[in-house]
Length: 249
Image 1: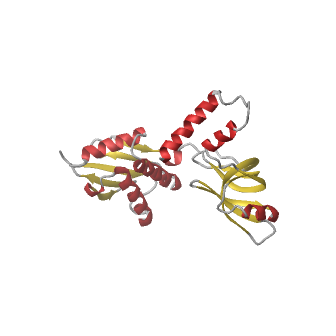
Image 2: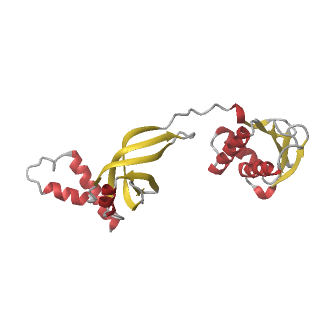
Image 3: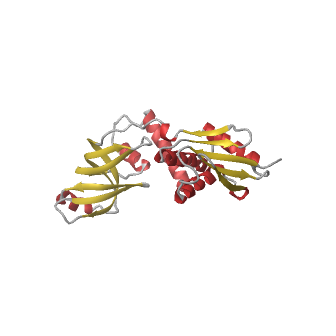
């Protein structure tokens, strides 16, 4: 089998005006897209629109063809899909469109919309009442309002403001039990559809009960004639508690 060459075309650049730094960014993203870097080589920039030609050695040519097909269908590994998004972002920022084509056949393997991709919906930041929860990991501040950081698993809630009185009471729970903060937050929608909290004004908080399922069941059983011991919810909770005990042992 012969080597296979691909060309990445950028419609707004020529070899004479493509900045070296930008060329490096495109080539780095292309290397991630194609994978199999040891057997893929940059060949040249062709005249006309900037055409970045690269060759895949025969040993990896079938693998690269399969990988690029999966990229086009959206089923490729995470790194390859991220590389496609990076290339599309580079093109959009350069007000360009691009294509990755197979040299020889001229077949477009992957089209890149670049400047022509649909504009993401944007929403102005807005405020609404909300609650957040986590462990207090920092409380402080030198101005009239105090500030805190709450850790909820891998998520850190920052830009939390509150009165000094609230901060003094919250500081007593530093690295302690999980707390739930009630207040008003300002949120914005990111391009990927995720929501980001810009700030949060704490009005009040409560300490959440950190009792285990087993401890909660024991407390329920201590209440006479509560009618809960025969319910499905109780039976399911007891089963969960037994599973937790087995896992610990």
